[in-house]
Length: 208
DNA sequence: GACCAGGCACATC
DNA sequence: GATGTGCATGGT
Image (cartoon, rainbow, N blue to C red; front, side, top):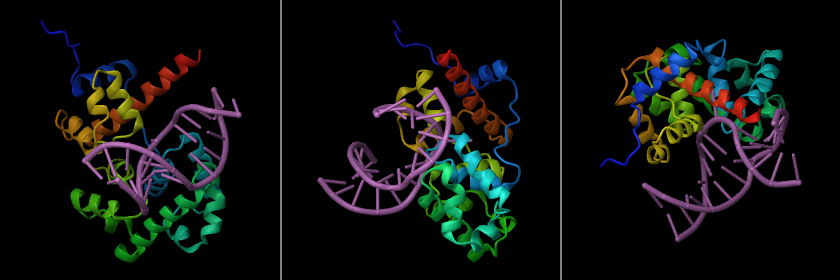
């Protein structure tokens, strides 16, 4: 007798979420620069606080790489303070814009000419850009078919019977999804957005 | 006043 | 490769 609980495939889980919540049309920023800056600022931080930091940068016309490269660290740190870890994240933003300036003449288009594996490697070489941040940039700014694994993703897996996978390495979790899904940028985008949407819906339920 | 939130680098074993 | 620690704000 099979005593194991039935688990839905990654694709079936997606279809279930999509049926319940519909398309999210999610986009974590107005420009590619804003998406990248947001990806760095949101590390281990609630998005609401990232929005405050982004708003500060926008107000000071600093929501672009050229400005961030030129202004002093203390100034950036002050503006992104609401996002937490502001000294570290200032260094991370500086590291990214310096790489872009040094290797691509400050041009995101030039950086994004790289093929996905080479681009991912290049992003991971930037201090402060780990796998999740790199993949967020790849999916949401460079529009590559890459699955983003974050805390929401792991909780989602655990909640649907995949506790072991949820606790596995970053690349293992990503492989779990990519092996079962078509390589589709829009699908990966929607999937991640739906996981976040579901988590927020459940949080609201718990709070009531 | 704990506890948590869309990580990452670095040290150590 | 696994585990532990520092980094910091703002909401619940």
